Length: 157
Image 1 (cartoon, rainbow, N blue to C red):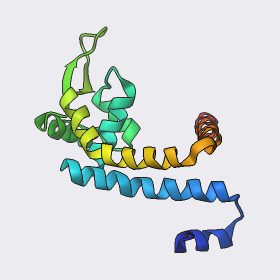
Image 2 (image 1 turned 135 degrees about the horizontal axis):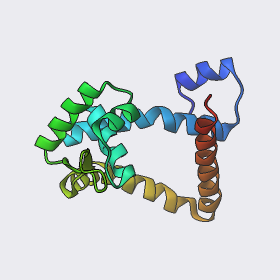
Image 3 (image 1 turned 90 degrees about the vertical axis):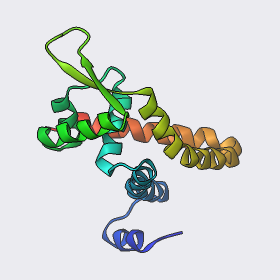
Image 4 (image 1 turned 180 degrees about the vertical axis):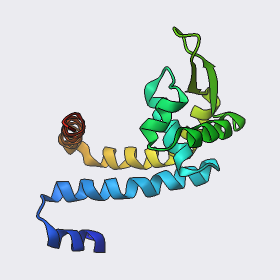
């Protein structure tokens, strides 16, 4: 289904149908992030922070977290304070540099995120199962797109 945003944007430039479909996924992802935040009882930026921390595995310093989120370090400190109070993250000494403190996702934070995210992932899995043999092609397309996004980011000058 073509929505009004897609209709308007298609008048401005041409793109292949899969590109437009992916653009629609990208546009709706932030809405889904806000729904996850509501379900978790936190802000959208808090959810973004939890996502970043889950991707890093070993934790990040508050300044590094702020840079990845595009916010001020003072705002990141307040955010981390909220997330620590909620039990979603913890501060600990850096494993190799004892002068530094890193923030990492807790098991409780992971579980809370999965309770909020799980129903959406189940919907995605249902759609994937319905693809049947086409799932391999879709998977290849999405992985190639992710690789192109990483290359685009790496080319920033």
